[in-house]
Image (cartoon, rainbow, N blue to C red; front, side, top):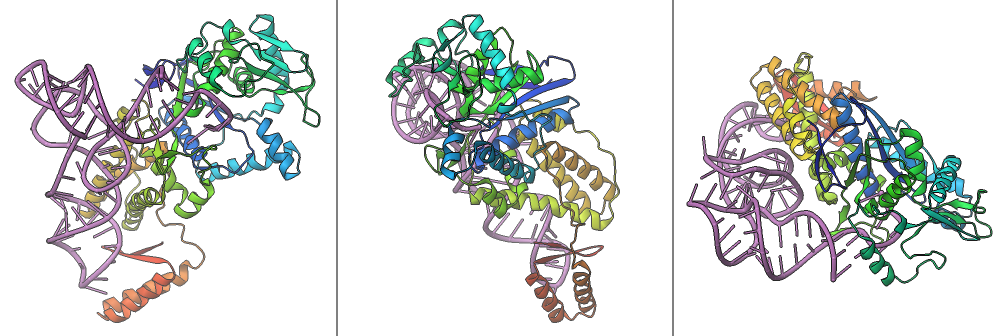
Length: 455
RNA sequence: GGUGGCGUAGCCGAGUGGUUCAGGCAGAGGCCUGCAAAGCCUUUGACGCGGGUUCGAAUCCCGCCGCCACCUCCA
């Protein structure tokens, strides 16, 4: 039985999807106005693993990620760079998905953009106004009336009193709102800003409303999973619920939130200005190191990411690659996947990848031990389990079969060394090996001959 | 101030009231190897502090200390 921690319930709940055997999930993507950082990568990998595991477990998954391509930050940044908002958004959206692609994050089944759903956004706002849950202000836009919805705050567990208290302490509250906790559904355009016509004046959607409208449009009411970073719990997700349920549309059944990336014991965040580039990390340590590091930690915990941690993750992944290489070199047979229930058992407990990784580590050891003993069948069986579970985590092992262009030249050198060793001319053998080392080639002598791989 | 989370061996990081219990990285010793590389085996050492419950607690309760997050744009 799959169990999922639901932020709204603050506890682990048995997973009962809307439709048996199917999972509909919506994960908040980005507002593309800057280069993707480590946090984007962490959250994307987290939900990619969840998606892959669900599919691995036999569910038919429909996966939606949105792009909020019109927002205050985009307008400001486009102005700074002297390009249009669509140009800016397209540029950073591409950058975002390019990096996710490197990380092996599967493309979503649907990729809705806010500007493509203006009609649905209008319809939802109109419903809210008709139901008395929202109001328009001439020249300002439309706002959600928070005190009209008794359940407001149920996701982030805040009462209206608490919200009013902290809102009052804030400095700049929008002057036009009736209450400091109300939030914009539609923002009137200032001169020069991009705008769409609407019954509440020319303007643009407020942040939050696009996700309610797009999730309902694509996945329908009462869809299964809604995810995002924990920093989105309030106000973004709380408001998404208010907008959908306030208009009478049951929203997500389960709310999942991933922990923040930490840098030097502090949350990496925009206000702190300590954001690290995702592409830099991948360039230096490789995408699988990043992915493995994420998988080694529970998705709801904070995760410190630094060079040391990525280096350690890389060492582990390379150990798995070495196993794949050795098996290939030894001519181990391909076998069907056996009993992976040990992996499923831990993963079913709220996607417990740290323990899933531990299970895989056990199979890896089994495979290595069998291989050392010359038992290729058992080694192959254990390895098949490793590969299968790794697939659920989205990691593909490198067995060295993709050798590159100068492979034949390297093979010649390796043979020279083998000949030298056969003649017990170890000085010559080591000289050739040094030559290969310079080329970034690492040798491994196995019972069935010398194999090599690139550093 | 309100709400939530965390504090485990050199580092990262799981964990259930009770025989050894994670796992990874690093370290030490051994095996294998001409030497390496890879691998296997063994091994060092832990549960923030103070109480309490219990036959027994890292695991439950209370208090304290420290750290972090959300309450504001944020994955």
